[in-house]
Image 1 (spheres, rainbow, N blue to C red):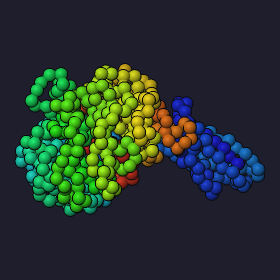
Image 2: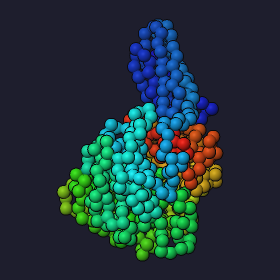
Image 3: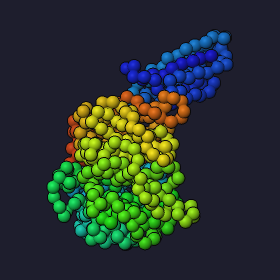
Image 4: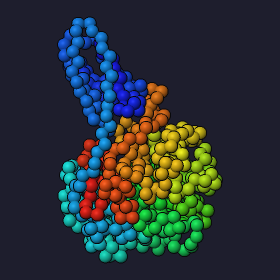
Length: 501
């Protein structure tokens, strides 16, 4: 018999969820104490292999005499890497800038790997992923471009599969209406208006152009900083957030946003055609006292029913509107009356868009979105039980926060993504000298994370003081799965090309 423990280097604690294989005997996964065991081992020599996400794998030989019992302690060393240049172009040296161009990651040819989609001067340029690099694919569209009067400050654009064929299409919010160009795997069809509303002449704005003062986004960030943030966090850090999301749970991406008349939705019929645009909830807009520079609004499934509810962190409280199936056809079709839920993350409690990223994520893997808030002195989490947010708990102290130098999200972006594919969203943050991550930990053994591990540097690139330094006014950092293994990579658009880790 052999029992054992896995632990991080530098005595940072146990490694939970590590894969332990004793060749010829079987495999185990370490528990929340980092422990494992194998029984009924006959005399002989066996290879013990231990691996975990983010760590160097290790192996060694164990030799057993008849009836012998062993206790093995295995130390895993964190694997800090360096970004590698994967393709030339798509950065400042190739003429791209935050103020004029949008770049995105999406699978445009249906091979399971995210590709580069760059809205440039003459058109939309694509570089398809090969799994270990990118291949220039040329200009897939010549219309949704800077030379054709599409402007970053007026016309958000994104790449998403709008007709359910497994290939991401290009979506542009124009002067009037939403335009879509469908992918055929080697090019985009000429973009056509598919949806009315959501456009610049319909009153939707990226930056507030009508007033000036402390409530404006331009009082917080330069245009380059704001447009960089808007690309890194689609649907956020703009006056009227617009995005492609599955509102009603039918498996198709709809168009929805927080506009000048309220929460507006155009439902997808599944083939890239849409129902009429309508206001589902007349609130949370400028006339109602909501401002992008002061308040947070987003879509998230709060009760696990598959419909996207709306979450608003306002002036005095956290509010939500649940999406309901009012006609009992199995799909969401309306937002109910707003409710006040727990959470002291409002503007009146000194939380600021310019300093404190606040977002929804399922940190404990129960399919209900929780609140994750990066405060002055740490990371606070309010778990969701489907009917309310629970009292905030500090899952990390003095990490990823303002007191430790993590100030503006423009310089130090932080987000939530499931890095180790365990179903719990983890923290990924770009610090001064590189990218840091922290994973969810189940300390009670109930199958759900209830804290975060100590942060570790994942990549020694992409930071404002890395070698070379990354400037958020010039350089873009995105997250996507470019090799198709299900684990996200960091993709950075530097001066001379695109770097990946």
